[in-house]
Length: 307
Image (tube, rainbow, N blue to C red; front, side, top):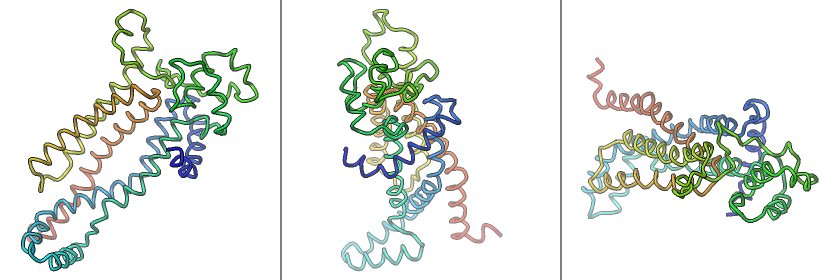
């Protein structure tokens, strides 16, 4: 995992610089607002690739019944079957890998986006790995110390312990501690799922607000998956495929909610904004892209309907 992060530094470092610029100049020096603006901006830049992927996937799905006819017709002659399928692709101007290539381009960018948000001291402030490790070792064992989120652990701890911050002034300045307070939620804190924490009267308002992060993460994930399934073509959907999609619609939100209980709330906010954006993006693609594409295909297949 560390090797992967190092390979993606050439993308994550510029992203961190942009995120810091947004934090300082547009987001009123609030980490939560910076995450929202940065996530929306990056996903908007990736929208053309997403549209291309959706168009290719939709077209392949629409052509699937005719593909199955070819496969059935030449099932005993695999060489002829392959030749006919390639001919079919060429006639319909379809690239079978067209839906994968845009996704492959997006993946390193999305991973880099995750790293830039989860490691603000490294990518936004410019602290070295050695300094971050040194600061992390100074944090006492406890709920504020997360091995997989050292940057956010450091910011949360030293923001709450000003006397300790003075002792490490050569490594960490007050200006390096980003403002993690977003709508009463400390985005550097990990939500707790333990019911007794809420029932024994020890929880304050901010703790209950923090609980909203994993809840909204699960809900937005559910609606995002459901809506993407709604927009998919049903021409080749079998009972097994429908069952698999329904299972994914349940498993994905549960996983999203569970993971949101193990990472700082800033990551949960990033997932929530990403899910909401994906729903809006899918609505846009369904209405203005795929619907228009299907009308063109229908007009090409039945030109008499436009006379």
